Image: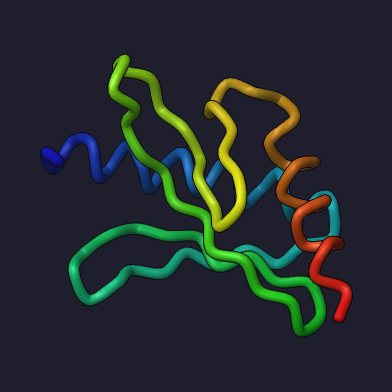
Length: 89
């Protein structure tokens, strides 16, 4: 991934973090030891990591443990919130 792609990915994750904050979720950007940008989304003790990646057809998408959404999908924050609700106990 080129440096511009990484910077764009971080910007897109920041935008997602703002949208998740409105829904009462805490989203903190983190960087792995390999340099990958992730978003650590929490609600209570539940944690979900969201990544931003370039798909094979050239579109950007958010991806997490059990799902994904294209970055232009307005339902992405709701899908992530629903995913965290699934981890009740």
